[in-house]
Length: 350
Image 1 (cartoon, one colour):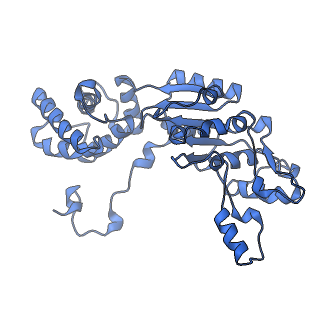
Image 2 (cartoon, rainbow, N blue to C red):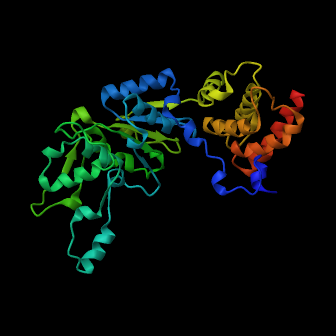
Image 3 (cartoon, helix red, strand yellow):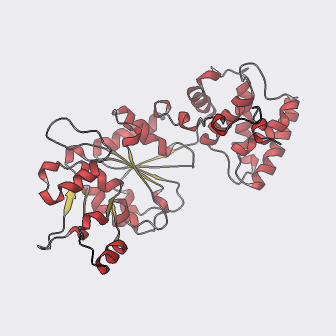
């Protein structure tokens, strides 16, 4: 089979004619639909100047919240600083990484330029705190570090270089158990130090965000393990619940305006009913599909069907529906169960 023909395109076309991914259009922050409870939690976090900790199932919209919030403040998506936590992440990594191995190699070969700043890489929280410092107020030898933090940001009007930025620390629960506790004071005061830049006077450089420019920080967690109570105390907490059927309809309408309003007789209502079957407890799926996967599946269906005119219930479309399940179900066992759910759903529909 020609793969290009499999998606309804003529064979023999150049690769540059392949379909353009629609994924980024679904992530447009203006289309994010926060529920009232989430809006309240964000406002509490802003009032208290504390980080917001979001939990919820993967694909529930935790990560996208900060981009919607930044948009409300006129900040572009590319100017949101983020850091994805891994099992190997250290507390320092949230602020900066210092390449000790490279420094050692350079020293061993007698390199002339041993400026420690060349071995330093700033990460999300470190950049955010430095950006909240006035370049003109830091010692002259540290001003280049502020310049490094400002790289990629448009210049600020006026002599004061401080700015407030948005920071996403994604999947904090993946970090080793002690990491959240190791950054408690830094989260409280938005302050950190870089011992590797210590000069001859043994003064360790410390950087602290100006109170009025403290970064807005969102932590996300998939609740894979319990976070320390001392860390939780320093955050405003909110759990994003699985959206209701009505909200799922609104989400699809917002992200796919060409489909139009989804009414009871609208063909997409059939697809949504099938999706809810996959999400229900009785499906017995190992990993039930998320809202993000619903959007992916919607795009696949919209490529095949004119959802305003044709129903997905037609028997001759069953093979295509089965193949589309790869956008929803992510294990071999779930795909087998999914086909059985689809067959039962089609049997009821006819």
